[in-house]
Structure formats: structure tokens, C-alpha cells
Image (cartoon, rainbow, N blue to C red; front, side, top):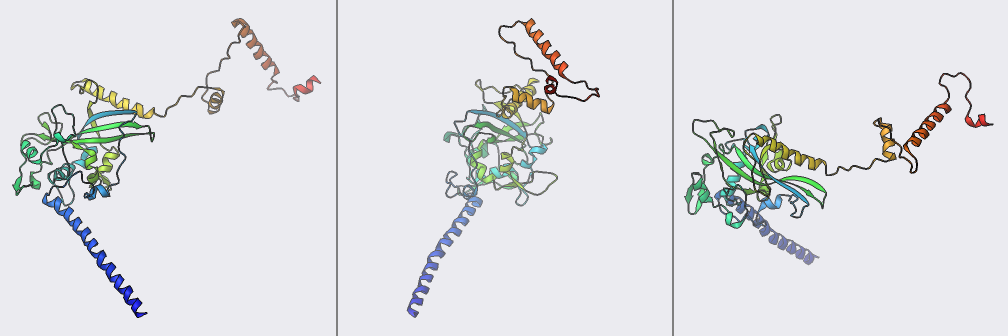
Length: 362
């Protein structure tokens, strides 16, 4: 018996010894992920196995490539408006709180995400050749940085988060025939730096401010990180009960259309007809969404009966003419029917006892 107990104790000790290093390996890997983000160590953005954000993020439904209908439009978001303010404030990082551009900029400098160059045509391209280099982009927009041992560091005060008061956004509205659903989702983002003089106030709508698009970022590449970034989405409720990914998924933003994907590759005119063209496109999208399930059934006898019950039928249904009869004969027959119907009705004010037609014939 004692021998048996000794064997059990020995086996338990072996199991505990083997399980302890695995726990240490998990802790070490977590610390390695944290240190790579803070120290700027470049990690592969496509390495899903080592990316904790991608593992923790419940993947949203991707847009199929073979949908039967899709409309791609480009919007311009003014971050100084109340609807888009959650993406801009706080302008300077305050504790754990930071705005969207600061968060994206840190992810880009640390090598967590890929960004792509903004072309003169304004179109986005997510190919390997169009990836932006960190040092080249910082030099292009005169963002001060320090380099030591191949590591690039940008101080918080040098991040131009206050000047990024505008975003270009690509939005795709599509109808998925597999799930029979209509959706509108964001596919790409582009922060825009509004450059103005030192004595002018920062205003995205200022005519003197010069827009400088920084880069394009694919939304699917940053969705995992945006799902962990809480924001305050209301002036009346100061609780951070929403993430940036929720904000974009629920289409809480407001932006003017400045371009659509069309055969000619043209943008909206920048004149008095621009507003009318924007309203026309918005109406097209709204009409398509509302008329997906709209079905006009032919009017039959059942529909007319239901309409009479609801008190909506105010037009009399005309009888179809019988073949072989002229219009005059139809009028005579209809007058006979109306006269016979009126004669068969009993008088309303008669005090005599009423009797049925069957009893009168007897």
C-alpha cells in the first residue's frame, strides 16, 4: 500500500514539473509581445499566430468578391463635426486615451501594420510595391524622429495628431445573395494632414489650409486593433462604451461624397452642382436599400376585400365587358341590375312587419 502511494506521489510531482515550464513559456511570449510594441521591434503584420490582437478579435464577415451588387464611394470626414469628434479627441494623448491617428501612427512606426502610399490619382493600392517605408514617410512630411541602432523613435509631442482633422474613407455598400443581406462597411482609411500657418486656427474647412493625405491603410489590417480601442461616442454619456471598430461598423460617421467608382474614373465637380450630385448618389443608395424587399403583388379580389375593410378603397371596380355585347347593351343590363336591386330593398321607414321573399311567393 505504501509503495502504491509513493508511486502516485511521484507521478503527481512529474506532472507538475512538466506543466510549469509551459506556463513560463506563455508568460514569456506575452512579455515579448509587449516589449516589441514599446521598443519598436518590427513584427510581421501578416503573422496571425503571434498577433494577440488578431487572435482575440472575433473576425467580422468579410465582403465576398462575387456579390451581385456593389457600390464603392469615397467620403471626406471632417473630424471637427460632432458626429466625427470621437476620432479626433483627445488631441494630445491623455493617459490611456488617444485619438485614432495617434494610435495608427504608433502601430505603423512599431511595424505592427502596413500602410500604403497615397497616389496623385487618389486611388488606393494595397500591393506589395506600394507599401510605405517608415523613414521615407517621416522625411516626406517633415516629422521629427530619432534613430538609434536601426530603431526609429518619435516623441508624442512630434506626432502631428492635432493637424490631422480630416480623413478620406472608402466605403462599400453591397448586397450579399448568400445571406440575403444589405451591408455598408468601411474598406480603407486615409488620414489627411491640414497644413496651415502658425497664426491660423486649425480648421478642416478653412480655404487657406492645404490638405496633405498621408497614407492609405486597409481596414481589415487594423480592425483587430480598433476593436480594443475604446472611445467616448456621446457628449451626454461620458462612459467609453464603444470601440472604434464599433463606431465604423455601425456607420456612426458623417461624411460628404467626393468620388465614386465609375467607368470614366471621374470625381464629383467642385462647383454649385456638387451638392446636387451628392444628394443624388445618397438617394440612389437609400432607394436601393429600401426597395430590395419591395414586392408589388397584382390586385385581385382578396386585395380589394381587404382594402374595403381598411377603408382604403374609394374607387369602384368596373366590370369587364362580356364578349358579344355592345356598350349600350352593357349599360342597359347594368341599369336593370341596379333597378332590381333597389326594388328588392325594403323601405327604411316602413312600420309594417317585414317578411322574407320566400314567404311572399307562397
